[in-house]
Image (tube, rainbow, N blue to C red; front, side):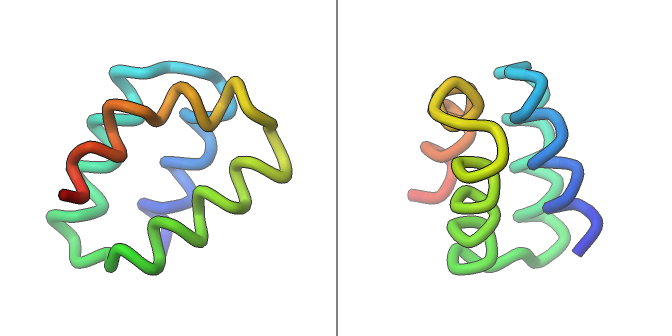
Length: 63
């Protein structure tokens, strides 16, 4: 899903407001929690903890 690739890209740039916007878009377009968490694993491996930290507020949208 291209939206999840966009989430990974903005997370790698550590743009918190961008990650929230991309997360909303991903959820609106039918991304599952499992797909999003898999994307978070990719973000963690490729961009590290700072990129994952940029997703804090975005991950709250999964509740």
